[in-house]
Length: 126
Image 1 (cartoon, rainbow, N blue to C red):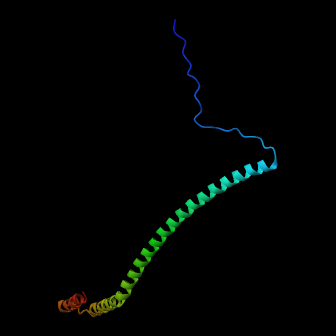
Image 2: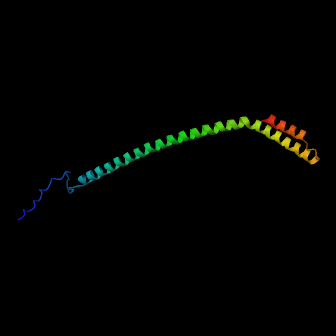
Image 3: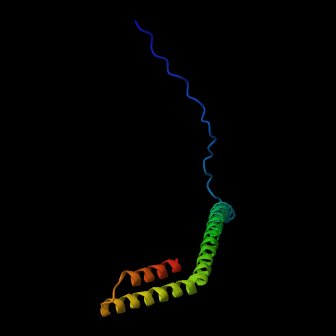
């Protein structure tokens, strides 16, 4: 016959669990209630501290990004303000050349010499 299987002895629980005790008066009840409220308050305060630190980090990153973008925008604006007069002068010169070519074409006086004159004016703009 086979030997009967041995059942291992029950192990002691690893965690010590205390059974709740009944309250005998209001003082014990209020003590339990205060303990629970204090625990919840500490947990909420810890959570809010973590959220505050997270928001502080996000605000710092956003401020850095805004400062960088503002710097780039100001630099671009200064560059455009410095070149606006040059751009207007070049556009005015091109408009005058276009008018000149339109006059030559309408008068039927289109010649190689006049085209060379216009080409030299265009090169002088560059």
